[in-house]
Length: 157
Image (cartoon, rainbow, N blue to C red; front, side, top):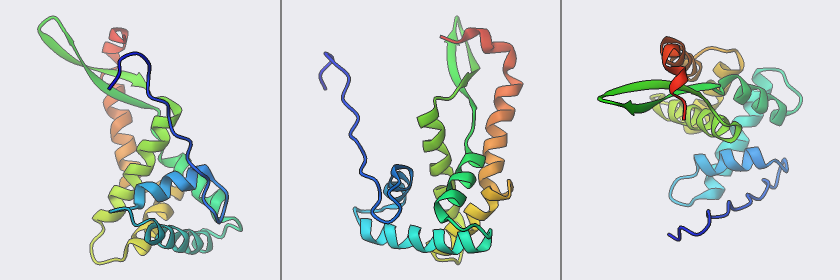
């Protein structure tokens, strides 16, 4: 990799059904082994069922609200100062917040045993929408870690 300039971020094409870049990113994260059509089928099916379950007219708005509830605002990063390593709380950039929330939702949906991915995604998105479940627990744990290490916040770089 060249050190002269930072690699440009590629523009993600919006998804064909809702025209949302956010949903296109989510589909890309769900996708395994390059099977985008399969990922789209899973995500679109899950969104329709999720919107019915939470009684929203627009599946996209319901998805955005569930994602917003799952986004963390703080995380801890290890900083070595002298001979000690401190967990320093830092604020997370908006694009990373979104990416982390999507990753957690998909990770926890994949962990659910005995369900199809579509059903697991519906369950996980519903939990996020209702501010409960394993994704929200992960977010709260991250915030708790940051809160516990608030004393080291002045070590930000």
